[in-house]
Image 1 (cartoon, rainbow, N blue to C red):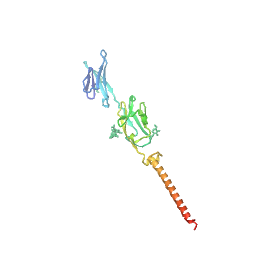
Image 2: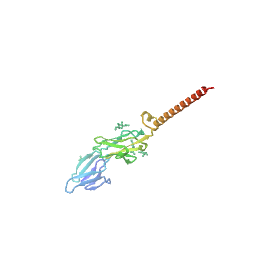
Image 3: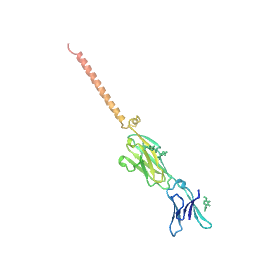
Image 4: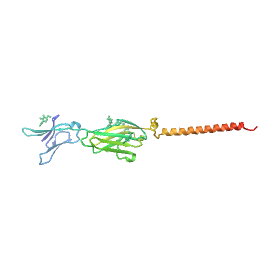
Length: 220
Ligand SMILES: *[C@@H]1O[C@H](CO)[C@@H](O)[C@H](O)[C@H]1NC(C)=O
Ligand SMILES: *[C@@H]1O[C@H](CO)[C@@H](O)[C@H](O)[C@H]1NC(C)=O
Ligand SMILES: *[C@@H]1O[C@H](CO)[C@@H](O)[C@H](O)[C@H]1NC(C)=O
Ligand SMILES: *[C@@H]1O[C@H](CO)[C@@H](O)[C@H](O)[C@H]1NC(C)=O
Protein backbone atom coordinates (compact mmCIF):
# COMPACT_ATOMS: atom_id res chain seq x y z
CA UNK A 1 0.00 0.00 0.00
CA UNK A 2 1.36 3.41 -0.98
CA UNK A 3 0.26 6.93 -0.20
CA UNK A 4 0.62 9.49 -3.00
CA UNK A 5 0.14 13.27 -2.81
CA UNK A 6 -1.99 14.21 -5.81
CA UNK A 7 -0.90 17.80 -6.43
CA UNK A 8 2.70 16.84 -7.27
CA UNK A 9 2.25 13.03 -7.56
CA UNK A 10 4.89 12.64 -4.85
CA UNK A 11 5.10 9.12 -3.38
CA UNK A 12 5.02 9.67 0.39
CA UNK A 13 5.08 6.17 1.82
CA UNK A 14 5.48 2.63 0.44
CA UNK A 15 4.41 -0.02 2.89
CA UNK A 16 5.76 1.06 6.28
CA UNK A 17 8.63 2.95 4.67
CA UNK A 18 8.67 6.74 4.34
CA UNK A 19 9.71 7.35 0.76
CA UNK A 20 9.76 11.14 0.78
CA UNK A 21 12.58 13.08 2.46
CA UNK A 22 9.94 14.96 4.48
CA UNK A 23 9.94 12.94 7.70
CA UNK A 24 6.63 14.45 8.85
CA UNK A 25 4.95 11.69 6.80
CA UNK A 26 4.62 8.24 8.35
CA UNK A 27 2.68 5.16 7.42
CA UNK A 28 1.11 3.37 10.37
CA UNK A 29 0.19 -0.28 10.03
CA UNK A 30 -0.65 -2.81 12.68
CA UNK A 31 0.48 -6.35 11.77
CA UNK A 32 -2.46 -8.59 10.96
CA UNK A 33 -4.85 -5.73 10.10
CA UNK A 34 -5.81 -4.29 6.73
CA UNK A 35 -5.47 -0.66 7.88
CA UNK A 36 -2.73 1.58 6.48
CA UNK A 37 -2.89 5.00 8.03
CA UNK A 38 -1.07 8.05 6.71
CA UNK A 39 0.09 10.22 9.59
CA UNK A 40 1.22 13.82 8.96
CA UNK A 41 2.91 15.59 11.85
CA UNK A 42 3.18 19.37 12.29
CA UNK A 43 0.63 19.99 9.54
CA UNK A 44 0.92 23.20 7.57
CA UNK A 45 -1.58 25.10 5.50
CA UNK A 46 0.04 23.85 2.29
CA UNK A 47 -0.59 20.21 3.31
CA UNK A 48 -4.17 20.85 2.19
CA UNK A 49 -5.02 18.68 -0.82
CA UNK A 50 -5.91 15.23 -2.11
CA UNK A 51 -4.01 12.16 -0.86
CA UNK A 52 -4.39 8.88 -2.72
CA UNK A 53 -4.01 5.47 -1.16
CA UNK A 54 -2.95 2.90 -3.80
CA UNK A 55 -2.70 -0.87 -3.80
CA UNK A 56 -0.26 -2.27 -6.32
CA UNK A 57 -2.63 -4.80 -7.82
CA UNK A 58 -3.52 -5.19 -11.45
CA UNK A 59 -5.72 -3.30 -12.14
CA UNK A 60 -4.58 -0.71 -9.60
CA UNK A 61 -6.99 -0.05 -6.71
CA UNK A 62 -7.04 3.40 -5.14
CA UNK A 63 -8.99 5.81 -2.96
CA UNK A 64 -8.75 9.60 -2.67
CA UNK A 65 -8.93 11.50 0.58
CA UNK A 66 -9.22 15.26 0.76
CA UNK A 67 -7.40 16.92 3.63
CA UNK A 68 -8.26 20.48 4.60
CA UNK A 69 -5.82 22.17 6.97
CA UNK A 70 -7.30 25.11 8.84
CA UNK A 71 -4.82 27.58 10.34
CA UNK A 72 -5.92 29.17 13.59
CA UNK A 73 -5.29 32.91 13.77
CA UNK A 74 -4.51 35.04 16.79
CA UNK A 75 -5.13 38.79 16.72
CA UNK A 76 -4.61 41.38 19.46
CA UNK A 77 -7.50 43.77 18.90
CA UNK A 78 -5.72 46.79 20.45
CA UNK A 79 -3.52 46.87 17.32
CA UNK A 80 0.26 47.01 16.88
CA UNK A 81 1.05 49.74 19.41
CA UNK A 82 -0.57 50.96 22.59
CA UNK A 83 0.29 54.18 24.43
CA UNK A 84 -0.92 54.35 27.99
CA UNK A 85 -0.41 56.68 30.98
CA UNK A 86 1.42 55.27 33.95
CA UNK A 87 -0.97 54.42 36.76
CA UNK A 88 -3.75 53.30 34.41
CA UNK A 89 -4.78 49.77 33.43
CA UNK A 90 -3.29 47.88 30.51
CA UNK A 91 -6.01 45.79 28.86
CA UNK A 92 -4.97 43.53 26.00
CA UNK A 93 -7.42 41.25 24.22
CA UNK A 94 -6.30 38.37 22.05
CA UNK A 95 -8.91 36.75 19.79
CA UNK A 96 -8.21 33.30 18.34
CA UNK A 97 -10.39 32.27 15.43
CA UNK A 98 -10.57 29.37 12.97
CA UNK A 99 -9.79 26.67 15.49
CA UNK A 100 -11.38 23.32 15.05
CA UNK A 101 -10.81 22.79 18.77
CA UNK A 102 -10.08 25.53 21.29
CA UNK A 103 -6.37 25.93 22.07
CA UNK A 104 -5.15 23.89 25.05
CA UNK A 105 -3.48 27.01 26.45
CA UNK A 106 -2.92 30.68 25.64
CA UNK A 107 0.36 32.04 26.96
CA UNK A 108 1.18 35.74 27.19
CA UNK A 109 4.80 36.83 26.94
CA UNK A 110 6.39 40.14 27.94
CA UNK A 111 9.73 40.64 26.12
CA UNK A 112 9.96 36.86 25.73
CA UNK A 113 9.08 35.94 29.32
CA UNK A 114 5.85 34.08 30.10
CA UNK A 115 3.73 36.15 32.50
CA UNK A 116 0.46 34.20 32.86
CA UNK A 117 1.02 33.40 36.51
CA UNK A 118 2.60 36.66 37.75
CA UNK A 119 -0.46 37.62 39.78
CA UNK A 120 1.80 39.06 42.50
CA UNK A 121 2.83 41.76 39.98
CA UNK A 122 -0.77 42.78 39.36
CA UNK A 123 -1.00 40.72 36.16
CA UNK A 124 -4.19 38.82 35.44
CA UNK A 125 -4.94 36.53 32.47
CA UNK A 126 -8.46 35.29 31.78
CA UNK A 127 -9.09 32.95 28.85
CA UNK A 128 -12.57 32.02 27.61
CA UNK A 129 -12.30 29.00 25.32
CA UNK A 130 -14.81 28.28 22.60
CA UNK A 131 -15.24 28.32 18.81
CA UNK A 132 -13.72 31.79 19.18
CA UNK A 133 -11.31 31.88 22.10
CA UNK A 134 -10.74 35.21 23.83
CA UNK A 135 -7.82 35.73 26.19
CA UNK A 136 -7.54 38.95 28.19
CA UNK A 137 -4.42 40.29 29.84
CA UNK A 138 -4.91 42.97 32.48
CA UNK A 139 -2.17 44.84 34.29
CA UNK A 140 -3.19 47.16 37.11
CA UNK A 141 -1.33 50.39 37.83
CA UNK A 142 0.94 50.35 34.75
CA UNK A 143 4.56 51.37 35.28
CA UNK A 144 7.26 52.16 32.73
CA UNK A 145 8.73 48.70 33.47
CA UNK A 146 5.54 47.27 31.91
CA UNK A 147 6.53 48.80 28.53
CA UNK A 148 7.71 46.48 25.78
CA UNK A 149 6.58 43.66 23.56
CA UNK A 150 3.63 41.56 24.51
CA UNK A 151 2.70 38.47 22.56
CA UNK A 152 -0.26 36.17 22.81
CA UNK A 153 0.75 32.63 21.96
CA UNK A 154 -1.95 29.96 21.73
CA UNK A 155 -1.24 26.27 21.19
CA UNK A 156 -2.01 25.40 17.52
CA UNK A 157 -1.63 28.95 16.25
CA UNK A 158 0.86 31.62 15.31
CA UNK A 159 1.27 34.23 18.00
CA UNK A 160 0.18 37.87 17.82
CA UNK A 161 2.19 40.75 19.29
CA UNK A 162 1.83 44.36 20.38
CA UNK A 163 4.26 47.01 21.63
CA UNK A 164 3.10 48.84 24.75
CA UNK A 165 4.51 52.24 25.73
CA UNK A 166 3.76 53.33 29.30
CA UNK A 167 4.16 57.11 29.39
CA UNK A 168 5.40 58.85 32.51
CA UNK A 169 2.80 60.89 34.36
CA UNK A 170 4.27 64.32 33.45
CA UNK A 171 2.07 64.60 30.37
CA UNK A 172 -0.73 67.19 30.36
CA UNK A 173 -3.16 64.44 29.31
CA UNK A 174 -2.81 62.94 32.78
CA UNK A 175 -4.48 66.05 34.25
CA UNK A 176 -7.69 65.49 32.31
CA UNK A 177 -8.07 62.03 33.77
CA UNK A 178 -7.72 63.43 37.29
CA UNK A 179 -4.88 61.07 38.11
CA UNK A 180 -2.42 61.44 40.95
CA UNK A 181 0.72 62.19 39.04
CA UNK A 182 3.86 64.17 39.71
CA UNK A 183 2.25 67.05 37.77
CA UNK A 184 -0.61 67.02 40.27
CA UNK A 185 1.73 67.27 43.24
CA UNK A 186 3.71 70.06 41.53
CA UNK A 187 0.49 72.07 41.21
CA UNK A 188 -0.36 71.42 44.86
CA UNK A 189 3.12 72.59 45.88
CA UNK A 190 2.73 75.70 43.78
CA UNK A 191 -0.59 76.50 45.47
CA UNK A 192 1.08 76.14 48.87
CA UNK A 193 3.93 78.37 47.68
CA UNK A 194 1.40 80.92 46.45
CA UNK A 195 -0.34 80.83 49.83
CA UNK A 196 2.98 81.25 51.62
CA UNK A 197 3.88 84.12 49.31
CA UNK A 198 0.48 85.72 49.85
CA UNK A 199 0.78 85.21 53.61
CA UNK A 200 4.29 86.67 53.71
CA UNK A 201 3.28 89.59 51.51
CA UNK A 202 0.21 90.23 53.64
CA UNK A 203 2.17 89.99 56.87
CA UNK A 204 4.92 92.25 55.56
CA UNK A 205 2.27 94.65 54.36
CA UNK A 206 0.60 94.70 57.79
CA UNK A 207 3.95 95.15 59.51
CA UNK A 208 4.79 98.02 57.18
CA UNK A 209 1.43 99.61 57.87
CA UNK A 210 1.93 99.09 61.61
CA UNK A 211 5.37 100.62 61.44
CA UNK A 212 4.05 103.47 59.38
CA UNK A 213 1.15 104.07 61.77
CA UNK A 214 3.59 103.57 64.65
CA UNK A 215 5.68 106.35 63.18
CA UNK A 216 2.57 108.40 62.45
CA UNK A 217 1.15 108.04 65.95
CA UNK A 218 4.40 108.63 67.71
CA UNK A 219 3.82 111.34 70.27
CA UNK A 220 5.94 114.35 69.60
C1 LIG B 1 -7.91 10.84 -7.36
O1 LIG B 1 -7.75 12.15 -7.84
C2 LIG B 1 -6.91 12.27 -8.98
C3 LIG B 1 -6.81 13.74 -9.30
O2 LIG B 1 -6.72 14.53 -8.17
C4 LIG B 1 -7.50 11.47 -10.13
O3 LIG B 1 -6.61 11.52 -11.20
C5 LIG B 1 -7.71 10.03 -9.68
O4 LIG B 1 -8.36 9.32 -10.70
C6 LIG B 1 -8.57 10.00 -8.43
N1 LIG B 1 -8.72 8.60 -7.98
C7 LIG B 1 -9.87 8.12 -7.58
C8 LIG B 1 -9.84 6.71 -7.12
O5 LIG B 1 -10.91 8.78 -7.59
C1 LIG C 1 3.97 41.54 15.37
O1 LIG C 1 2.67 41.85 14.94
C2 LIG C 1 2.63 42.57 13.71
C3 LIG C 1 1.17 42.86 13.43
O2 LIG C 1 0.54 43.41 14.53
C4 LIG C 1 3.26 41.76 12.61
O3 LIG C 1 3.31 42.53 11.44
C5 LIG C 1 4.69 41.37 13.02
O4 LIG C 1 5.25 40.52 12.06
C6 LIG C 1 4.69 40.68 14.35
N1 LIG C 1 6.05 40.43 14.79
C7 LIG C 1 6.45 39.28 15.30
C8 LIG C 1 7.89 39.20 15.70
O5 LIG C 1 5.68 38.34 15.46
C1 LIG D 1 -10.18 47.30 30.81
O1 LIG D 1 -11.12 46.26 30.88
C2 LIG D 1 -12.06 46.37 31.92
C3 LIG D 1 -12.93 45.15 31.89
O2 LIG D 1 -12.16 44.01 31.82
C4 LIG D 1 -12.86 47.63 31.73
O3 LIG D 1 -13.73 47.79 32.82
C5 LIG D 1 -11.92 48.81 31.65
O4 LIG D 1 -12.66 49.98 31.37
C6 LIG D 1 -10.89 48.61 30.58
N1 LIG D 1 -9.94 49.71 30.59
C7 LIG D 1 -9.45 50.29 29.48
C8 LIG D 1 -8.47 51.40 29.70
O5 LIG D 1 -9.78 49.93 28.38
C1 LIG E 1 9.59 44.28 19.94
O1 LIG E 1 9.54 43.52 18.76
C2 LIG E 1 10.03 44.17 17.61
C3 LIG E 1 9.82 43.26 16.44
O2 LIG E 1 8.90 42.29 16.67
C4 LIG E 1 11.49 44.52 17.83
O3 LIG E 1 11.95 45.25 16.72
C5 LIG E 1 11.65 45.35 19.08
O4 LIG E 1 13.00 45.56 19.35
C6 LIG E 1 11.02 44.64 20.26
N1 LIG E 1 11.08 45.50 21.42
C7 LIG E 1 11.41 45.07 22.65
C8 LIG E 1 11.39 46.08 23.72
O5 LIG E 1 11.70 43.90 22.88
